[in-house]
Length: 92
Image 1 (cartoon, helix red, strand yellow):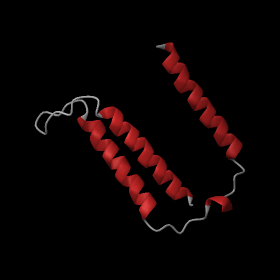
Image 2 (image 1 turned 45 degrees about the vertical axis):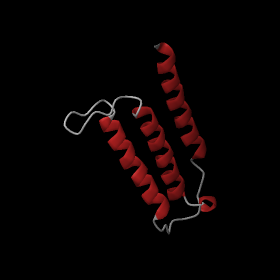
Image 3 (image 1 turned 90 degrees about the horizontal axis):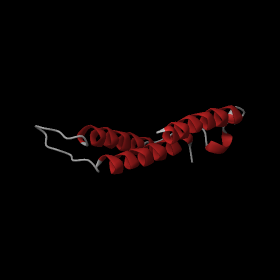
Image 4 (image 1 turned 30 degrees about the vertical axis):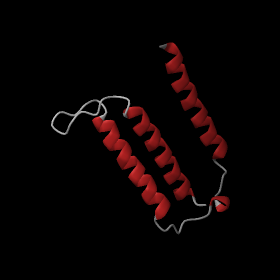
């Protein structure tokens, strides 16, 4: 498994979630698009990009061969972003 394929799988998952959430709104027509039109188009583009990353031949390093020395720094940044996002949800 390579990092590009994992990133592609994440793009497909995020695009699928966005598509599922976006289709709760009315889609509309081509002449008069509804509120779900643009999120649907963007999520389909995101899914297509993720599938392209998964399917295309990858010559990058394997996941186990990567240097994880900055992993703690990345985890701290991810934790702060999650805290800010959750704090914004709780403040509403």
